[in-house]
Length: 124
Image (cartoon, rainbow, N blue to C red; front, side, top):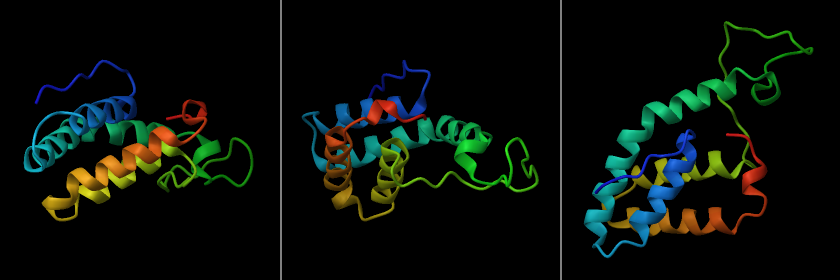
């Protein structure tokens, strides 16, 4: 499947292309393969965005005082309220399950994501 990767933000590309796959007229096995291919294409960009989020002291929670960071320790961003990070987590979790439920789990996560209010207010 052709993926539209036009945004500078990899999370926006992930959501847009996951939605395109969900509404496509293909069966669930083809959707499963398309989801796996999408994640493999976007995995380096998603990791890079997460790494840049980790560099921000406001998101990493690894500094005791303002502008004092422990560079030796890289902690992943853990904010369950951020809908972008939560959708990525749900997407990856769905891909680790059996192939028969990939499409259902991703479409459920996508419906939750689009139903979330103020999703564009979060930094990703």
